[in-house]
Every structure is written in structure tokens, then in C-alpha cells.
Length: 138
Image 1 (cartoon, one colour):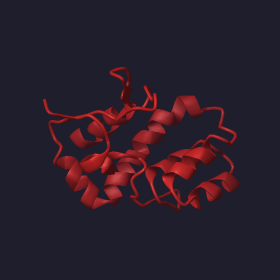
Image 2: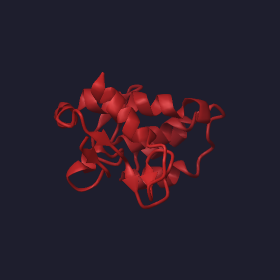
Image 3: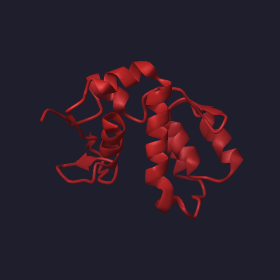
């Protein structure tokens, strides 16, 4: 099976940091990373600040400083699955590119130690890759 082993270069669009506007909960988000970071909070002021972050990187930094909702660890995989579906449902060009990867293994390979969402140095759960493949293969 062919493998896409990182969401960089020609496959950067698979990343949550890719500018792919979505509307969810009546709010527009510049990327899945923006929406994901906002979902960690129950505070509408945090949502607005994250929504206005000029990049996904800034949204992630801000998201690391907010008060996290108590149920976050229980719901974060479901939140990511929902955001993934919204990203591809609302961006048909990206959905077509994703469907063209049918039969390929998608691995969010990284060098920053993320072994929950991806794989670093051969170790990791690759939850993001699996969520994207689940969406694609449905």
C-alpha cells in the first residue's frame, strides 16, 4: 500500500493548518486548527480571539493558553472527526484531492513529537491520519 507519510509539500492540504475556510456553529473559521482550538473552550471570548488569529499557528498558541473545558479529553477525537468531515464537505476541491488518495495510508508524520495525532520517529497513534482515512473511506 502506498503511504503519504507527512502532510507537507504536495500533501500540505491534509494538514489542519491548511487555509480551508469552514462554517460551523454559525461561525466561520480560517482552518480546522482555528476551529479545533476554539472547541477546547466554552468561553465565547476565546472563540472570537481564536477566530481572529491571523494564522493556524497563532490559533494553536492561543489555544494552549485558554481554560480547557472539563470534558475535552473525552470529546476531542469526536470533535476532530466532525471538523474533518466539515472541512472536506465544505471544500469540494480538497474532497476531490482526498478521494484521489483512495487506497493510500495517510500518516501525519512529524518532527515535533506529536505521537497522539501523528507519528514521530516511527512512533505514534496517528489519530489524525486515521480520522481522515475513515472519512475518505466512508
